[in-house]
Length: 393
Ligand code: SF4
Ligand code: SF4
Image (cartoon, rainbow, N blue to C red; front, side, top):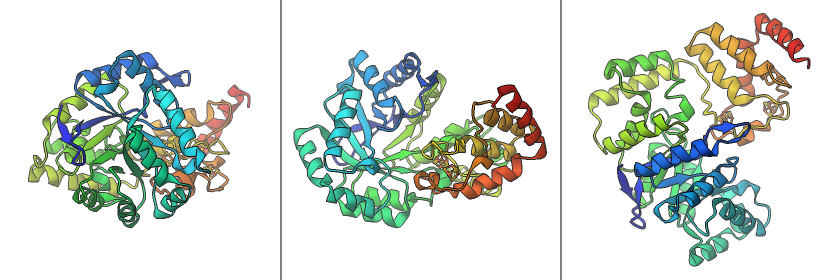
């Protein structure tokens, strides 16, 4: 495993961080046994940074159980997040934090983040509630070792936030498709200049740069290096940049853990060739030409009061553009009707609640109209009617 140093405190962090957001679920709950096997494999291969959050259902507790059973708390760094948007009064800081410590079965957090802190107004709201004083006290007692924030806003607010406080680290969405989106390369470099470690999330954009990559972009990569995996392409672009400290990957398969550990041991800063950089440029062009919806499948927009399964609608819409249309239509029919309530795009009544939570700032209502137009054809409507009779709702 390759380690990168936290310039603030000398921590040697594994360049591959374990994103604990996508563990496999069984009957609605995390399959602890399977997650344990995957986490143990990553630990054995040298991963020492584990990222979770209050709002990832069951994730903190799953990680806590794993760390206790493997007696390895001191060997790893836990990163978790305060749902800052749910803080209403000063006591809430402590209440959420205590709950997180209980779930994680620990008495300290190595890297603590304000979750989705996207602008200065939100920061000032937290300050007015006493966040600075609370953090100071936690750092003094050792219960919080490093304080940071995760970010999904634009470049200007990112700089403002970095300058507003003496942060120990930050976490941004970054990948070859988002080089100039959100904080972007400019934000990454600015944080680095300030001597801050930068943690990367959405390195493969929730699968959009791997299994959901449009065919034309796949062909670009395949031509440049036959047989090289799309995950390898995605991660290599990040590892090539020395400003990147840790890249999070939401692993839920032992093969994935093995492959990622191999990539993160091999690819060093400034190692990509001109020809490889050209392949990224051409692939980005091909992705942009495909007209797909830029959803990462994070699920923050859920639940919808009208039960619209937004990430599924968008994923299938994207399949319909990059794969066989009829296969996607069948998938859409199965996924949106074989349930006790319908979850298809046209159930949307346009309340806009979902858009307030989307880190990608997607115009969800507008995109859902595109899904409806493309997939809710007469064939879909007849099929849905038949299936609804079968389901008797
Ligand atoms: S705008 Fe539509 S999809 Fe979004 S929450 Fe409202 S009803 Fe659901
Ligand atoms: S629409 Fe936005 S919030 Fe919802 S799953 Fe996609 S990226 Fe996440």
